[in-house]
Image (cartoon, rainbow, N blue to C red; front, top):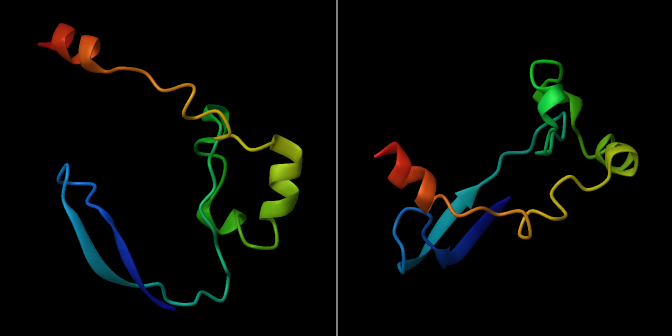
Length: 82
């Protein structure tokens, strides 16, 4: 699939640009999936496909559903780190 993404650059604040992206088809149809900390080292990227994702989300819930409410300001941490 060829797509053109138009949006703010993740590297430059306030810069908007267009970029062509190519996502090659995968016979495994893998998808990205948020993990719990206790899952690190126990799962593999091939564990998550378009066929397994619905069942996983049904079992674990949407792990990123409150990501915006859980955000933290890193300014104090960075200042303390000095």
